[in-house]
Image 1 (spheres, rainbow, N blue to C red):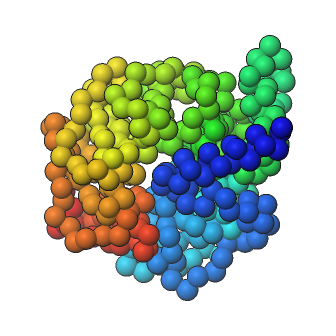
Image 2 (cartoon, helix red, strand yellow):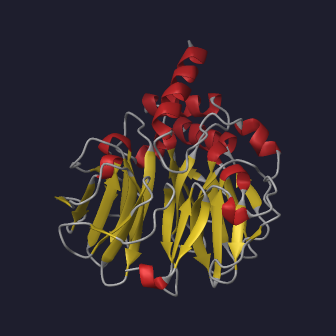
Length: 356
């Protein structure tokens, strides 16, 4: 019975996660990928990259098979980080400053770097996270459902995709992922604490995106799941969702707005921390997978059809006049105003004249 349940969970995960950016190989051999370093590639900018951020003046992008691509000249030239100890798909990356950063991905991995992304250390993987969850659940034996969920995590070994990462400061990290995965570290990733019990998510829907503004945090997930914390991530309550489909993109906009987007181009904006949502019209029925803040209170959205849209405090989305792009995983606005699109064909830099 246990093996049948595990197989069913993996089948459902493969179906659901296939729709999510950054989860293109849910069935990858997590055990094998944890034992092998990142695959070496000649042109890392042409690899399938799923997420990027800035580390001082450097660009750091992560993607499939453990590839970490680095650029020190605004995406003109790239080289590959050679010190990545795993070859799992990496789905998110964030830095506290120019040297100290973290990345997460499949196999429940959390990696850390202290030299701007050249060398990385494995802090924990899905096996360790499962143990953390089970230890926390056993401290509350009255929470039977939580204990059963933790036991399943342990039984599944490392097969746990982490999908989003927030670096609150140089010490505090928060990660979320599939199956209601949620963990926190208060010492830069050296030790971890389970946060699954903080989520109002009894059916363990996937947590796809996390955005933070001060003590107000929002999480967006599958099947319309929206969660909000008003105490800096210490507890989360479910919000009424304007859509029953899955969300993949979430962004805090300006000082008072949030934008959430997902399947079939559905996009909504809230100015009261998620209590009410207004539809943003004008997008085709292609799933939005990435959102980025724009100066002046706007948001930039990218979809799997390779299209970019903006919204500046209005009720409609505006298509950007850019060349046709391959399916996009993430779009990032660079400090000089250029855009960096991470696509299935690699990283594509769009000059500032094309940017809003």
